[in-house]
Length: 346
Ligand SMILES: [Zn+2]
Ligand SMILES: [Zn+2]
Ligand SMILES: [Zn+2]
Image 1 (cartoon, rainbow, N blue to C red):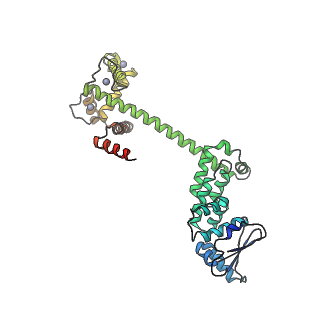
Image 2: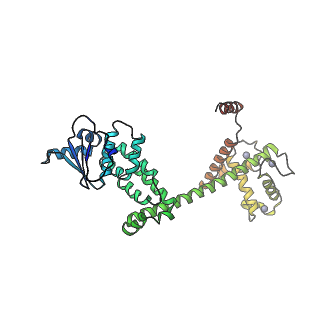
Image 3: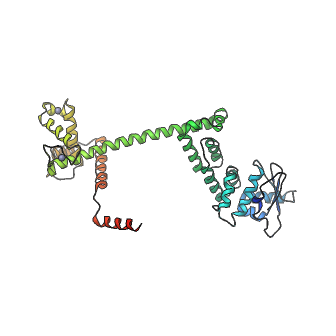
């Protein structure tokens, strides 16, 4: 590969392939009038698009096989051709190739997409991603869209969403606002979706917290009635909710309104009833269960069909119960021993 240049292209870039045996047989003309002499065999084997361009040039009146790579500066075309040569001999991850990639990554991404060189395209996407900033995020997002690079597109969109205040100051965003309404809407939609996702995630976490609290209440009921809380008069050191639950039960035992259907007008009794009912829905013990109303609610459940929401609640609480018991499970001694042994070795 040789470059006949009208300006000062970096000579280091042209070394690869220059000493290759056979004479060059194809000319690449760039936008600023430079000519790069190259081997058609190297270009054709790297890129099916360049192969077709060379074939077409040879079949036409143009017997010197000249092809044109336009729209990017000569230096970038030289770098592109050099990489097509070099990648035959050294991996794309080698330091000298990384330098070339870093210098021209945007143009190389566009060319590797247009001329269909997938391995180079992947390396370019990685190099571009490393150089992403709020200032260039919108421009790179546009390029990622044009070059069909979904991963890079996502990375840009995430940066835009994360740092939208800084992105709003960029020339890229200002240009989009003036000239590209569709892209502006697309970006705003992404921001909205992200907020929506965040909101849903927050709701899910809050719901999970409620299921965990209820599952703790279920464990606590078992602790009071089946195990027998040893600290009936003192504040309980076993469960944080034990004292509160015992107070609620004392109230339930003496409240006049509890006999009204579903706890009647008393909210505290209603809550107690729901906790007993939830216990019964998640209890797998037979008639011997000591938790009050367990068998009463079980019989009632068999007679009446449970509504869907309640079934789902019972299922979620049962899952939270399993998860917390797994998290609190004591590791067997042999696991602890092998862990200690492993840590000593490190
Ligand atoms: Zn207790
Ligand atoms: Zn009450
Ligand atoms: Zn029970």
